[in-house]
Structure formats: C-alpha cells, structure tokens
Image 1 (tube, one colour):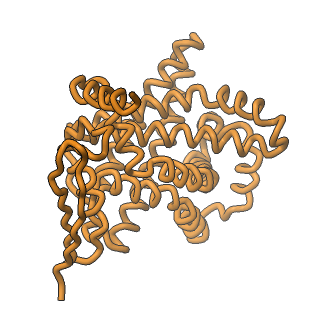
Image 2: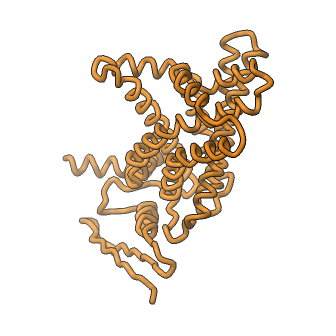
Image 3: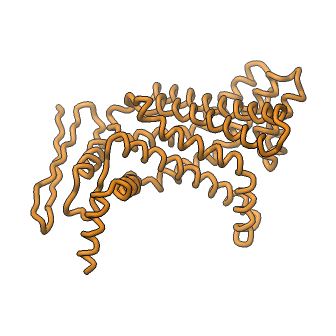
Length: 331
C-alpha cells in the first residue's frame, strides 16, 4: 500500500506543475546541500557585520566632518542601537586621516571578505559552474573586494533613504513603507551586481532578476522588522542561553535570511533551466534528474584537461541500475 501511495504521489507531482515545481525546488536545495551553505553564509556574515559597520561609520565621519547633524542621522540609521557604543569606541581609536586611515579601512575590508567568499562559492555551486572554470586567485579577490564595496555602498544608500523618508514623510506608517520600498530596490540592485560579479559564467538579466526581486523583498522585510524580530528571538532564547541570547538571536535571524536567499536562487534556477518535474522514485529518474545529477558530477572538474561524463543505464519498470563513468582527458 505504501508503495502504491508513493507511486501515486509521484504521478501527481509529475503531471501537475504546481506540485512538481515546488518539489523540484526543494529537491535541488537538498541536492545542493543548501542548509550547509546557508550556515556558512550565516557564520561569516555574523563575523563580517562589525568590520563593515566600522568602515561605514569611519567613512561617514571623514566625509561629513563639516555636517555633524547629517552624519549622526546616517550613523543612527546604519548602526543598530545595541552596537552603537562599541562602534563609536572603535572608530575613536582608529586613525582619523592619511595613509594610516586608508590602511585601516583596507584591513577591515579584508577581514569582512569571508561572507562574500562564501556567497561566491554558493552561487557558483548552485549554478553548476565547474571548478576549472571559476576565477583564479587574483581575479577572485578583486571581484570579492568590489562586491564588498558594493554591499557597503548599498548599506549607506539604504541609511540615506531612511533619513530622507523620515524628513519628507510625516506619518510613521508611510515612512516605514517608503524606507522598505527603497531598501528593497537597493538590495535588488546589489543582488544583481552580485550575480554579475561572482558567478563565473555569463548570466542573463531575465534569469537573475526573479531571484534578486525575491531576495530584495526578503532583506527589506528583515531590515524593516529586524529590531522587533531580534527582540522576540532574544526573549525566547533568553531563558535558555542567558546573556548569550543576543548572539543566538542574531544567528537565527541571519540564518533565516540566508535560507530565504538560497531558496530564491533555487526557484530562479529551476524556473530558468526547467529543472522539473523531479522523481520521487529514484529508480525512475526524469530528464530533469539526469540534468541536475550530471551537473553535480561535472562541477567537480578541477583541471583544465579534466572531463567527467555520467551515464544512466536504461531500466525496466521494476527499477533501473545506474552506473557513473568517469573519464579524464589529460597528459
């Protein structure tokens, strides 16, 4: 009975696109080890927050030295209240100008590159780019630093939009909506830049914009509701983790955002490459299964002369026996 029920469910999701597409997205997320990549982005993102905030505040303090009121408003919009004393103390101990200031900013940028490197690996993995085709050391570092500067610039623009919306709009609700819309547009643009800079193969705009749009809406919602969500998470975790609850709440919030961004990317990839329906019964793979599994195997090509080929043997209704053949063309 269980076998018949499983076969019926497989037929239903293969025939109806609503079920088949949703299952294909989840299946590809599992095939790509999405949970592990989301955890890595969360870990490195948490470690990169403070250096990025420190760079942003240091830049604002030097650029707007003659406009202290505007500088204070932008810093308040950029830095969470819980981190403001720590950031202010760190900025006060930094060199204020000249070559030491530039060296300090560059050092902080390099200390925050971990999250971008993690995103770089994740995007190329989701896109199925073979390792032999990915960027080499110097171009990779240049692109990662450019992406980090783009993220920092996007954060400063979001802070500026928050200040402008506060000054222009009098109603609190409209102010929040205006800030959220502005943040969504900025994050949308930053995510499109991330795809162009970090993915080691040409990606068309029509293939990237759905994921960027969903990611922009998700991040904007978190930025708008972040304080409330973090307070709720800390309140629930406080009984167990005590003073460590703030860190746990921050990790939880970042992990939810990472999961949402990864699912947005998977939805866009499955939709663009038509990677559905997928098979519930692995003994009877679909054409989409073959393409996904073949891509996962070929992704491991590391040398310029290395080629990995996969072959799926035909089987009968009772099941199929599959063999994978690996060939390496080289000296």
